[in-house]
Length: 128
Image 1 (cartoon, rainbow, N blue to C red):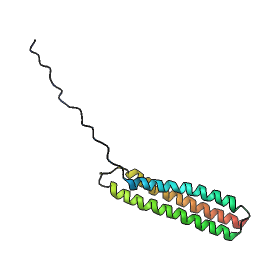
Image 2: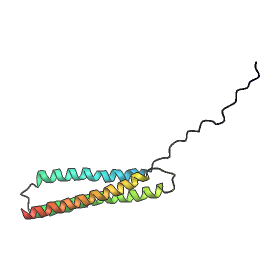
Image 3: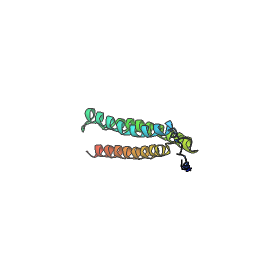
Image 4: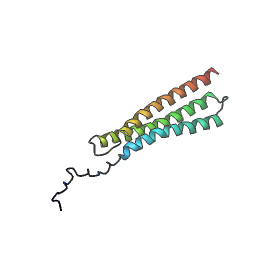
């Protein structure tokens, strides 16, 4: 024996901390916002199949109002879940703040696009 003692490591490996749980409301906000895309595809497909170019103006108004109600309802759910998700993630105990913000922003943008497209379609139906 040489009398040499090997030094112990000065720093221990950092403990592995589990990730923070995800806010369900934040994730739900983004899913409701993305559901607006699916609603648009389904409603536009049904509209084209049953109320083609020769549809009366009353039917165009009915489809526009129904479309707006469905999309606004989905946005209302996305907005409510997004605000709840923002509140849940404010303290840092839960993660998902970006999803909550994305749900609100994407939902709002899709509502504007949907309403604008619906009004454009309605105007074009009157112009012939």
